[in-house]
Length: 219
Ligand SMILES: C[S@@+](CC[C@H](N)C(=O)[O-])C[C@H]1O[C@@H](n2cnc3c(N)ncnc32)[C@H](O)[C@@H]1O
Image (cartoon, rainbow, N blue to C red; front, side, top):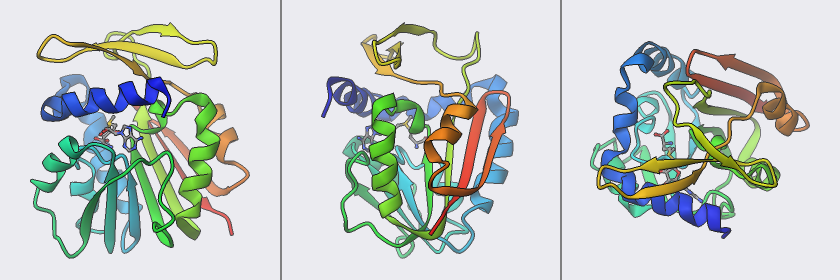
């Protein structure tokens, strides 16, 4: 694992208990209400692989409509909070795992959801991630990624950019510890260019604070 990936997972382990405060930002409530309406609708009756599910914030909204969800995160700390939501055990399972190299035991899913994960991928690792994700899906599967737009005054400022064009933020947790976190803000054209050889029915939606990319995997 690269240093920035190790820093990222360690940061989210430390942040687990305070993670969902990000969903309390007052200026983002109208967008979040729209997303809570929109996102579950993509997964009705699908077998869903959730990528980097964290504390299960989105899992709880997708679970009532999906046939099954397998939700993966690298950190037991975030998954403990997800499990405490007591989602139906016969349909929702949580696995510890690295989504940058998905185990071959994940296969034939008919949907994938990734909340706030695309932005944490190094620019150079998106291709390998997509190959690995798509191997876990059936042709025609729907893929939905949700992530942040950069909004001055609401987003944490970018502290620096590395030689490969990845941007970073310096984030502080409630205990005062400071963490360097890789956080990219890819534009629509970049997102679409990454997936267009695999994808049909591509739709990019920009709200005020978030973007949603939806596509279907070609055969
Ligand atoms: C921004 S949070 C998103 C959480 C959740 N998807 C949401 O939308 O609320 C990013 C998540 O990625 C997880 N993570 C970081 N590196 C990972 C990796 N290599 N494999 C799986 N999960 C990872 C972190 O533990 C964290 O829960």
